[in-house]
Length: 273
Image (cartoon, rainbow, N blue to C red):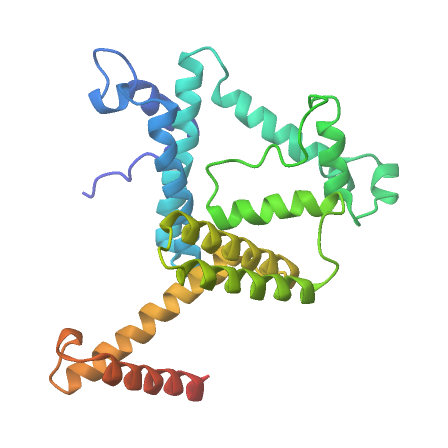
């Protein structure tokens, strides 16, 4: 006789597991010594692993990674409950209320659904929510999290500035600015005694404007760079395969040979597409 299937777990079970892990004396020593600050990097990492599973269309992996990300929410909520800040139920209540509030065209009255105007709606309702909460001297750029990846944060800062009119009207001035920043970077690298700090500053300025170009093109720079990384991995792998067929490894080759093989791999991909 086969054993009965394992009992299905619920969010309540997960909350109890987390509580047990954090129970003094009987809990897990590692979990007990963690804090919001030490867990935050894992939260970011799990979010990226979710995105990676989606990028690879690996739904078995996505299921697991979503569980890992859910655990991060439970973890932070448990620590907040211990400190008397809020509970997991408060988190659920807050996001539920927000989703209902931000979708009157779905959850609102008949009149609200009939008179709904999608254009600019999301921005209007977020602004309404924030009105009265912000300090009088609050900057337009406040509220963009420091922990965001730098390219993502650059786009969000630029978006906020654009909402108050600080933005180029089209793409051409952005391209001109990129050329200007490239020239300044070149100048910084050709000084008699180049400053690493100055070079890093000019390089950062160039990346910031390149991110702005992505915003004008409606291209997510983080996603575009991630795709470029994957393309590089794929094509360099092709170079390694071609070298292997010649009985070589990359460290037994040179730039001229590998560059020619790179072009061969690239041409093969373009023909196949």
